[in-house]
Length: 103
Image (cartoon, rainbow, N blue to C red; front, side, top):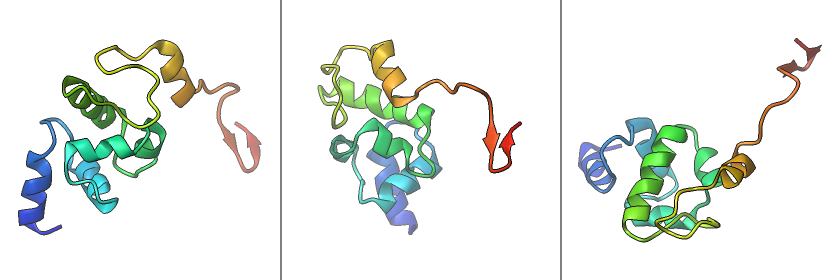
């Protein structure tokens, strides 16, 4: 990404959102924070480079602006409920699996 574009993308997001997340967001056309509202948590987490930390920072910044991600059940300003988080990140049961069976 050219440095002029990188600087614009970095300044459009709150501090703490890492470069891998910024590159991933730019790859899908997101160059400003409010453009994230087109995507759900699941869609953003599916981007290589966007993890729970970046997502949390983005959600908090959107909440401060009275906005939220697409498909968010919680109204802006209300913290996410554990049940909403469990729907996005279901618990892993039974340990690890590989193509050869359980570990």
